Image (cartoon, rainbow, N blue to C red; front, side):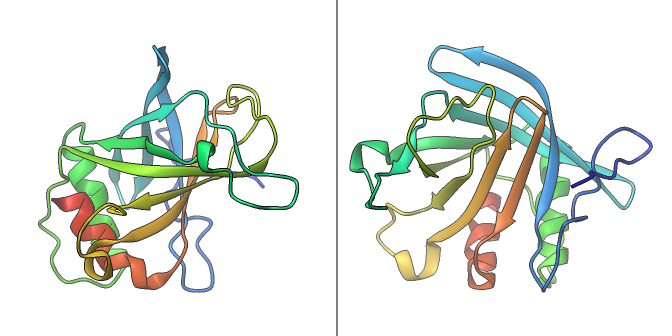
Length: 183
């Protein structure tokens, strides 16, 4: 899979979208370790605008499933992934998502922070620093109104090569995702 970059060196946001899904690719910048977490910014390019936000991921995320593909409860990470607003590029991203998802309001501002429950879709040990990791993230999974606010997506990290692939799981999660990230 070859990633197409803009003139500024950032990946074109939706280059891997297909079959009606908006799947996104971002470049990881400013990667650093802080305590038990990786902190970094993600950036992409879309129609002349730089898009992105900050991310915090727990360093020790391990495979979420045993040999029989049963969920390992100790490998469900509440607040395992956190997104946070870094400025106008974050607002740009939320507005581009709204546009790509077919919503009319394009004057949104990203919330300051949104946390997700995370499960690695792997079995066994994972070394995030040197291996790609596929993570399913669950937004607003602790809310009292799950029917209205809950959403899921895939947040796949390739720290070694410096990319994030953020993919939709289901089109029905679009509206809750926009509401959740625009606070």
